[in-house]
Image (cartoon, rainbow, N blue to C red):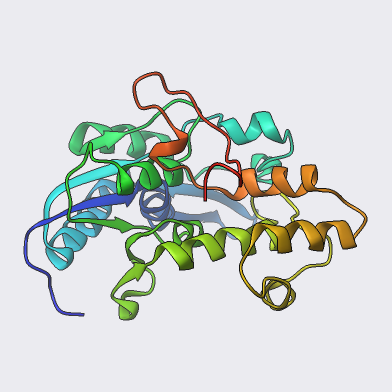
Length: 255
């Protein structure tokens, strides 16, 4: 991928970059092979340098004139909708220096963290908001950002270049995720519905098709709507940046 002219604002999912840099800084050390004594070591200075290299590489590659890092709040509005949201992740540990690296990043770059929102939501709002001038490129490997009309770059798949996510594609992707759910995030979607089945069910790409699929499984539109709201990444129409009030997605109002 060739470098872009320096004119873009980068909107970066910092949760992912900080986590990756934190993990890369960890080393397992065996102190005594006979007694099998091991410890886990992490070098915060190394993690800081690693994160800075990652961000500077993105800035150079994508032609950044401004970089904004988006972070997730600890509790989000999705937890209020579904108490089991991301519950499985509570059992896993954070990398050793994750919190310290996150705090340092906030002093090094321009960052945004809004109450009750995930980094994905912050990116979705900023991508479509006039509060940040265009041109903008969203930087994230999270598939959820494919539900937002934007310019999207996936650091883990640089060969794809900067993708243009259209409104039609973004809307369809959201409805597909309403059907398939996301086991990692802890919302099930339509029982027994994988990606291939979802594609077949969503022939014309309409909300009515989603509801029909749920009803065919003995469920109703209320359950379909809950799954859709869990899957929906927020946009300016669904979030007030001044009051921090979230408006839940409604298929009759928000096309």
